Length: 129
Image (tube, rainbow, N blue to C red; front, side):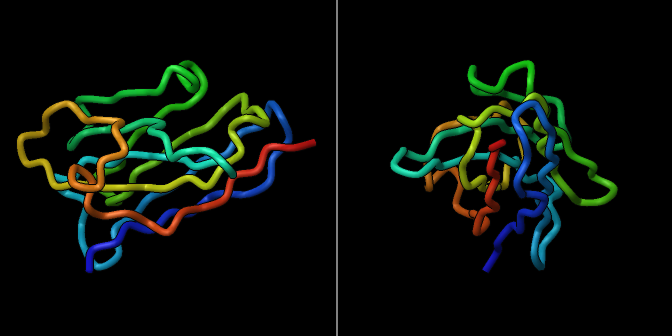
């Protein structure tokens, strides 16, 4: 079964930075859109950012615009979410989800398991002093 694998979470102080990574487990990310979602305790899962293949289209939630940057290195078959100026409200489990998109069209931040059939197990990000 195709499953992306996230890494890079951890504990960071407010104002700090983290970089999350997403890799395919047993498959390459060629022609896959990569999306990042997060879920805080007691809250619904929400879209954070996404990037199409090979990287022409990106999208961000309003809450992270100007602070987070999504990217991918297709030579390393890895997607990234660079998170700067982190706030306590960014505390959540962050998930990488992928979907095959040969047309390389714009990506979506909708939490749609039909649109994004492959999800990682998540990585915890905690922003606290």
